[in-house]
Amino acid sequence: MGSPSAMPYAQDIDACLAETVGAGGIGRDALDGALARLARPLARLRAARAESTLPLLAVPARTDDLAGIEDAAARLRQSVADIVVLGTGGSSLGGATLAALGTDAAAPRLHFLDNVDPDGFEQALAGLDPARTGALVVSKSGTTAETVAQALVLLPRLAAAGKDALAARAIVISDPAGTVTPIRRLAAHYGIPVMDHEPGIGGRFAALTNVGLLPAAIAGLDVGAVREGAVEALAMTLEAPSPAEAPAALGAALAVGLAEEAGIAATVLMPYLDRLAPLALWYRQLWAESLGKDGHGTTPNAARGTVDQHSQLQLWLAGPRDKMFTLILGAPEGTGPAIDTAPAGGDGLDYLAGRTMGDLLAAEQRATAETLARAGRPVRLLRVARAEERSLGALMMHFMLETILAADLLGVDPFDQPAVEEGKRLARDYLARMGAEPGKVEAP
Image 1 (cartoon, rainbow, N blue to C red):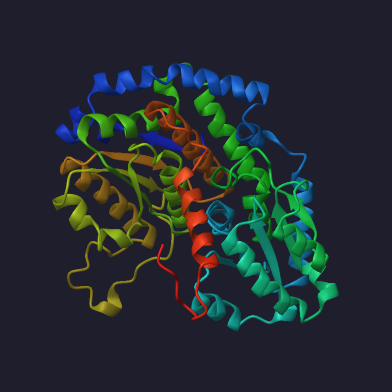
Image 2: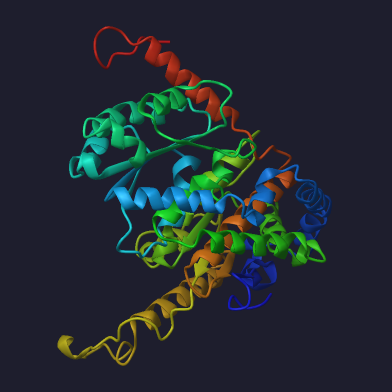
């Protein structure tokens, strides 16, 4: 595969192969067998893109909605200093992942509140000026209990500083009008404009729609470049001459093949670039909620280099041999501030003398990859030239395709979440049966 300078990312699987890492890796025959099973699913995805029957595949090439997203972002940027983003799961993680790239000091501060812990919620709001705070409320269904509750608490507080002005300081994203939902009723009550959520795209696959791109645009990112990267990733997989040359198919075959052949039960995603760290949290939901069905799936874990070299690497090297590792590496060598060892006396610091902070990061990420491989742990490397819109859009599209293809290999539907829906139903039942005494829940 080519270098990340020519393409938005490059994938290296050599350290996942049994011929490289031994019994912990996958044999060529098993990998080839899994790839062969993906020929038909890839053909179906190509047809779905051509016929526009799977909306998430059509979104990257769209440009007709970008002006509306950028106009909405500009309106919010002009009127507030802080924006509270209300949503949970895919309604929050995609936007948080993209917005983490932002470096625009003039952009409003984004606060992603995705839980209903009252202490955390109140603490997050305590330092904000209601008259200079906006809101972005995201719920595909319009009925998400956590988001509805958050909005019912936040919007009256913001409206108290000027209900008429709230319409200029808030936006709701929800399913197109048809069914009147609590979120749409709230928006109507406060005169807040509503942007339509893509109806055929579930929350965890919605990062490249307005759900993810509006926070990104607020943060000052080039949202067109995000989609351009996604278009490139689609082409790299769907236009490849064979499954073995399709990066997302190769990743899916690796993950499922390692689970079937080597007993791999968990997958660790570890970006070494701080601005890509939230990507691991977004991926964790995507992989877990899409594949964890009917006894299938591997457990995704979010990690961060170099931090987790000091907190988890001991377990990874000397604990159970049940994990596949994906390290996302940058090209930091020679970048960043120079390290002057003189103030520390210089003794024992020869390895840092004359180096930059980027040199240290480059050495650390290489050392971790090699240490894991030498210990017989399967390690995939994803390289990017830098953390920017094009590379992140491509990585997100890669992981969406990889997840869909892995689901096909496992024989599960990647787009539903029946266990999650059962949990939501039970939570509503428990609320309805709460006794008069606060905090008490009647026994089932």
